[in-house]
Image 1 (cartoon, rainbow, N blue to C red):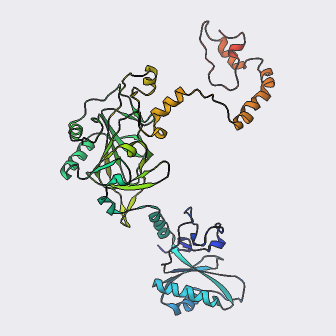
Image 2 (image 1 turned 90 degrees about the vertical axis):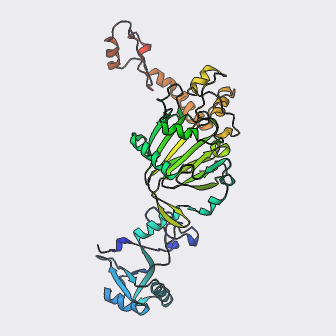
Image 3 (image 1 turned 45 degrees about the vertical axis):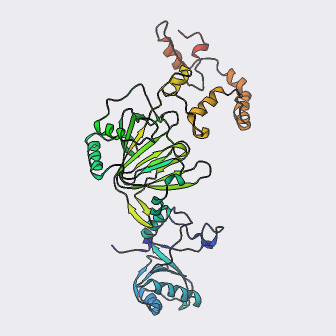
Length: 438
């Protein structure tokens, strides 16, 4: 398939772009890409445009070859269609394109009375691929030799927690069952208790059937650093392009440890500190067990970005199928507090007393229910909501003098003693303020 002008991008100057106020090294803006992405200088393509004004001289493909071949062999010239006075010239060598650009800038680039504007150009697809690559943070494998808790306090890693043979058996056992699409971003299976993605908790009163033997064997080998004995397991299947958004596992729902066993292909996980924004990345390697405790469990968010590749040691590593097995211990209701509090926490009312109240739903709930501070409207709410309705109240009330005809007909058709609820209507239908109610 032959290339056209539309397949290329040119490095328009910053002064001529929409980001003229940005620093001079911010490059160009193209197709929704951030203006921080620079057009690489190592390109064999030059974009040439020229004015219609000047001597009546027709610029042809051969004209451009004659002008530019003095700087090196020209591989091809792609002319603009219609009235567009533009062309893309491809040199056989990148250095020849760079020499030609510099020489034309120095000479003024006027030929046969026409002024030529010359810029580096690049294939659009190659540029977008490079920008996509540059946006992905690089994982330095040298970090494997450093204690992960140095970067994220409380994070524990057990490499080669299982053997390759055990990994194969685990994947086979999981694939015998049904992978469910309970969430849009990945496929899941639950054991012990179903994880509710709306409440981010489990209902401890409705356990699933007995865990399969392979789950039991994993629980039996869990390191003593795990807080308690896991009783809830979620298996997640991640295909290329799938991930999980940044989150902290609910404090009130589970105890102080969250474990993840990674199977299949490696992927990069990102941890982020909620206050200072620090970001740390780790390579989730096959057969490794990761246990989050302390700050890594309660304070830092973690996620796997949905993308098709990771960057490891500066190289692009395409993703393949990855399966994670997550281990949790459900906080069961102890009834030490009020029963209503227990029910509101979905039967997981053993309060979390961690040292991170800003991220703790248990402590925030307690604070909200014990606070005596009066809930006062903000100035904006007072002005545009409260004051507005106070202004129109008298007129509004004077127009609510009779029920809507269809509502009246509906109510009159009901048997005597029927209970009727008027729910959620802003404009009251006056069912209960006229003699028609039954």
